Each structure stands twice: as structure tokens, then as C-alpha cells.
Length: 313
Image (cartoon, rainbow, N blue to C red):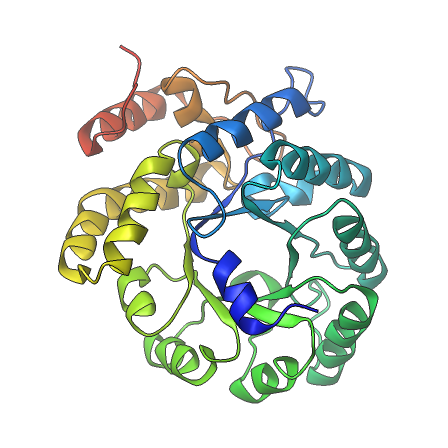
């Protein structure tokens, strides 16, 4: 059974949702998924300096069947080859499906699972405790709580976090909420008990307070940059890290946010960026829509402006 220090050692650095690649007929393109994972490992996203999330929202999990999710997770774990930490997203509306996906993640050798409370029907506190207890009893790999109230409709209180953190396998928290004060207070209260991954964009402050990672989609196309920011923070250069985060990541996040409001989904910008650096991005599945040619031109200028290497002419 892993302890918290072991988990903090592997849930560390930039955490990126690995995109789920599709063929032109929108079937799974597992070869490209494996190739992209190897590209990330070669770019420095290895255990202790990064975490890969298979079948997260950025990996289009809502558009995948359970069998497809299993295939993608296995492809990511196999391609990582034990060099990188891999967590598998197992959230679903159905607790039984979550358990099945969690057990599969353990079987294929994933390092842990990420899971939010069930959604669509908003759960109660008692529902949520029972849900995480069920998963805690089903697997022996670390469980990362995913607090995503803007999608789930349920926001974990400090009392609930305290209850869940008492379970043996609940050892990590992907954290965001609607109040900066509450966000930082949770890190203060729980950084000793959980490996906390920043999901609010307050990366530098979170690191200063003991968070062990942060969410970044940019790492898919520029892993070296995101690893370098993490190493800068680890070295205590918070002023420099914040300046670089503002120069690069904020511009990227602004663009991604605008595209999400007009095209749906999370992976289309990353896939278009892959195309622009000469890698295969490929199509998206509905209801996500491909970016327009005009938006691709804008994205190309953004990537060149922030210094992403290898952007095609």
C-alpha cells in the first residue's frame, strides 16, 4: 500500500491530459496515441517531472465507450513503459462503470486513477462518501479526487475532503473551486495528507504552499517548457517562473478558453497545435468541432509568438 510521500514523489510536476487520437473515420488511432506518449517521455515528462492522464476530459472521455477508454488507457500505460507516471480517468455517471474502469486501470499497471463524484444527478455527501469508499475497497492503487463543480454540480467541502482523505487509497487531489481564498486554504489544510494538483492556474502560489503538480494542456506540444517551469519553481525561482507562466501559459490559456466557448471540448486546440508542429493531431469527435481555418492561422501565430519550437511554415 503506497504512503503519501511515495505518492507525492510520483504525482509531481506538470500533469497533462493525453489526447485521444482518432483516424479519419473517427475510430481510435492507438498507434498515434502511443507515438505521442513516447514524444512526451522524450521531452522530459518522466516520473518525478510529470504525470500523464489517460482518458481525462482533455482525452475526450465523454465521447468514448467504456471499451474504448480501456484501450486508450492500456495504450498510454504501455507506451509510457514505466518511465512516466500514468493516472487513468475513470469518472462516469454510473458508479459501477467507474469501478470497472478503476479495476482495469489497476490490472494494466496504471499508477493511479482520477475520479470525480458522479454527475448528472447531483450526489449528496452520503452518496459521495459511499462512492469513494467503494472505489477505495476495489483497488489498491492511489485515488486522486477530482473536484470539478462546474461540471459535476457538486463542490467538495473541507469536511468532505477531510473524510475522504481518511481513506487508505485516497492520496491525491486535483483541486479547483470558485473562491481563491478557499482554494488556497484547502492547500494549506491538506498538503500534508494529499498530493495536490493545481487546476485553477495559480500554479506558482500552489507550489509555494506545497502542491505537487499542475494541470497543463500545453505540455502535449511543448513538454520541455512545462518541465522547465516546474524545475524553476523547485529551485525557488518563483518570480522567474511566474513571469514565464504569464508570458507563455496565460496567452495559451486565453486562446484555449475562447475556443472552448466556440467549438466545444478540450482537445481540438491541442490537436490543431500538433498538426502545426508536424505531428499528427487528427480529427475530433462530435459534439466537439474542428477549429476554423481562421482560428488555425491565429493559433499558428500564437505558437510562434510564445516560442514553441518546430512550428511549420
